[in-house]
Amino acid sequence: MVTLKKSWEFDRVRREGRTWAAGLVVLNAAPSKESIVRCGFIAGKKVGGAVERNRARRLMREAVRARLTFINPGWDLVWIGRAGIDKANCAKVMDDVNAILTRSCLLAQTRTETDPSI
Image (cartoon, rainbow, N blue to C red; front, side, top):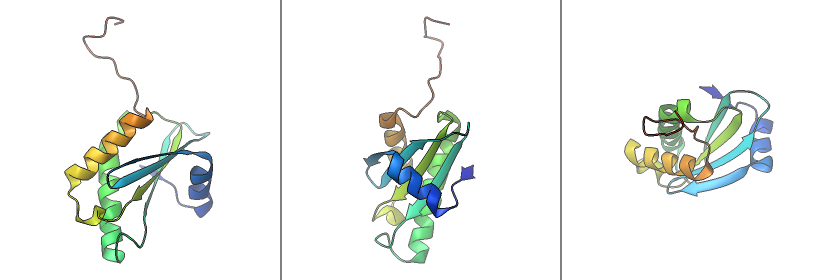
């Protein structure tokens, strides 16, 4: 997974992108000039101390990693953990990530056996 590192990269996504929220996770997404998906993960002090913020980022990173191959390339994504995410289980965070990706239409369209255009 390629990550956003610089503060100006996070600022650009927050300034130029759109925002979606579901449960314990918020997504800011902006198109990029690269043909890959780059992600950044933020957990503010409202989440808790350093241990809780690190757990929140790990939970979001794992949930996104599971869906990364299905996300359309060419996007910079900033994932933000809300208060309470450090106490959530991985399944809840994955559900929230899936809900956001579905609503934001960032998931790649895959064909199935029932698709008549095959």
